[in-house]
Figure (cartoon, helix red, strand yellow):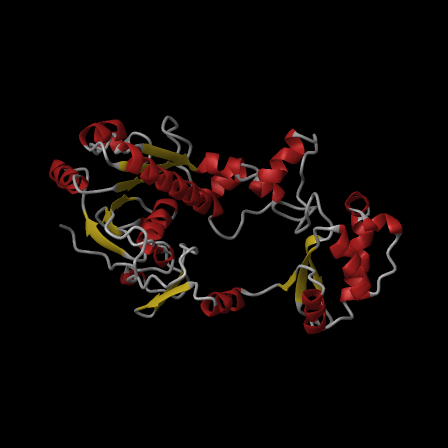
Length: 361
């Protein structure tokens, strides 16, 4: 495949998820990605799911973000390894790093010095809290500190973190954007640059309408289950007569009018506009729950499709991954599978599976 980054050389000095996910994206886009691992390998090689054998060195977690790469073990605490790495950087386009603040300098990888020695190099670095804060950034803590745990839960009860490391993935997306813009700028100026992303900044920037509800409208968002603070009904799951749960995402007055017609609900006039639905959220949820409870999921979803009312079933993870398979969104090789990240590609990039752990060099 004539992928957009064919011929580009990437060195990845990153572990866990955010940096490796960025590296996998670049590999899917055609880049040659060399993952430099410490002795013992990326820590996620040992993060095994129940039933996995820990001596396999390619855990399910590791397989989430390391497709399409080659791997080499280097102990960067030794000057010989640092010299070898700098020789690699002479022909590298993109360097990915996810060190704790101070470690890059300790390993002879101060970004400012690297740009002096390799002026076309694009450096993408991820930290937890920025270059000056020594704290280690882990997704669960970032979710808590950025307000996501507080907002993610039922109206009464403790909050919960989301079931994937979404803050890592948001940071990876931001780093991808920065790297692609830096490549575009390098085409014009010939100069590389240092792109910096922190997990906390990525998380705070993703608060979106929840943040502006407070900043603009003075409304402090609270946990409300699957409900939406600005739209009703949106996100709430309702159980059909066959036990299948269905989610509605009704964003306009027209869609709501079509929904109550489909369900034969005698809706008060005030429900016909968005502000009225917000004020009558509880009554609407009760009415919808009763009306949907006597509908089969197949009939309800077919009716919603026909009227262009946004609706979908609540899938289990196996059902969702079957959908991913049907849509060509899975890498599959060597008995391993993982979702693709470069969703913009129209063709399967046919990249290799995650690399085994090399022997120490």
